[in-house]
Image 1: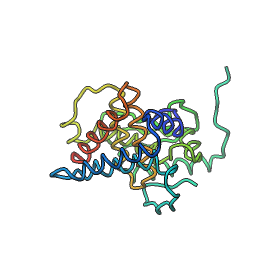
Image 2: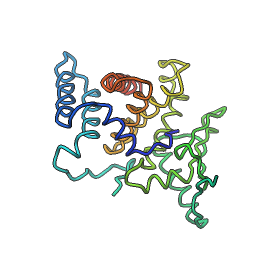
Image 3: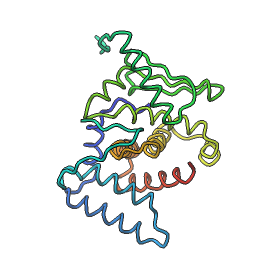
Length: 79
Length: 163
């Protein structure tokens, strides 16, 4: 079961656990992505996961809002 | 104490919910029965039940799954059902059952179910939300955020390779 905790509470909890400013957190994620990309065998799944988490935690507050991608059949964008 | 309860809806709306839940579950690869129940579960919105055979497995979808789906600040129905499909994969997928520990704590299983769900869905918003859920569960196990993130990266890469 996915549990009753609301998504906004989860996001706020995870964001607060990284005791960094938005700028520091963005830089931290970017560094991790760079490290993963520079490995002899770049880990594409790790890079994608880091990008998704970075966007989940810092995108909306540190970057200009971008239009969301049209979603494929298995997902639905909420408005 | 008065328990929250779903507002009444007509039979046609209940049937529409049943059809929509079944359609999404099938798209996610769920095998077995899908049932919509117009009650509150107090546990998130859906529940997977392991049966004697995959065809008899049961996915129960509750009213709050649709309430949450309608709330822009909460999980989509796709996320909720993909998480349950993650539990089914953990129980049924031959390579997963062969390569992953047989006895995991409930919490670890919840983390893995969310990670599998994030691999099943294509939409980035849903993927992000499921990853947040996985990190949140890991942090609830007293892992620091950086360590929790490292664990999530490692597990997700492993699951992607296995699937």
